[in-house]
Image (cartoon, rainbow, N blue to C red; front, side, top):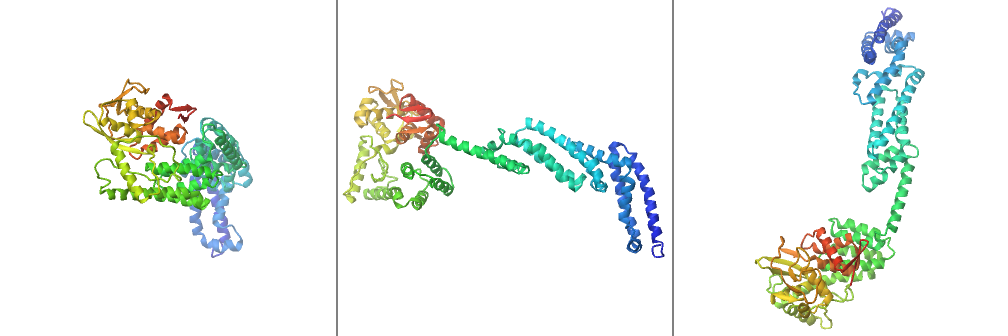
Length: 593
């Protein structure tokens, strides 16, 4: 027909036939119940769409010749126009379609599962509507209903959810609306519905959200970076959201800084804060990271000379107790300090490390000169550290008469050392030393004790005496009475650590009290640390410490040989307070000389 001049008649007949068919289709859709309306509409549209494709293929010649020459509407466009005019613009369908879609969206928002295949063509059908009709009959009611829904939901959620849960719900709702828009709505409606969700669920509640107990500050303190990221990404969608976060952050940082300055329970000494951070390098595998943090804070210190004093004392404690991470780590920090402050600032620190290396070499030379293996020799083994008095932060030593066998070894070392360093003078700092002794109790069980030099002097006396009074011990050791009482108390009055027995058994040490070896002493460990003396040593060095710092320092001293129990250390501290060796002043412990 198209080839023989009947193209226009064919085009007109097609329009008439399709119109008649679509009028029947329209009647079928209008007859559908409300719950089947959209499903019937979509089914009929799918059939019409497939039929149009077949008709276009059959009438392809007409489309390419007669339609173009006579300026008629192409088959596909004609089919769409007729669907719009006869189905979508049917008064009943036009009225029911927006309301049906609104109902299905409402049901989906309430959690009902919607089979979207049954309404998959809805978005295309909505596009067929006239723009003014779409906006008036669907978009405006849809946005108004959405605003009411999300306003009500946000009021409920803000009262029953914490900040994290609320933000997750907002994020979920935004995702749902975006996906829903891709299925049901015209493209121009998507930013409008997302704006409604942002306004009702975020903008109207953002100040309350960030100030919740579980809000911005809590997330910062708990390092909840995922929740912080969610908070920022949602609030930045709203006008004033970023400034709301910024204002609270500014206020929090200002209050935190002010608290650090004014809080009586915290250290107000910036030097001490850097020192505490420096101590962490003994606990961490990545020393370089800690040293980098130390140097970053160090550059802000004004009292760098005070820090040098603190650091020299701490370095001395680490080197003498064997707690230094490594010579390389210690020298690395010294190099960094030298770059910042020059050679004079670090000269004493460098000489301290040199003294330790020199001491190791001279002890090997000493034992070689005696023809004795320092590891396997018989009798007492001496490990002396030769310290330059002008360099090390030493203090007047407690007088102490060493046992004869120890004294003999010390004198041999003195003679060896002065033989090659005749112009020097050796003075023993016995209170800085420790001793490993083996105690055999009544049942023959042996225990290795790591004790202070004074404690060792006391224990050795019981090799030749079964019972000794405090006065006898003081005469034999020449230890000043106050120091001796502390020493005896740590050996006889500490539960589970009392290697000596005392008569009478109380917490007071008198000159006529009598002591003997505790034959019932037991321990699951072969190596036992008498840690009360460690508490005394730390407090004598630091003078004032808070509880956590004191426990930490004592634990560090005990760690080379045993794993200390913080609860046990705290009991020792409480006992020393009762004995009036320490004074508790609002969790700040002060050593009483």
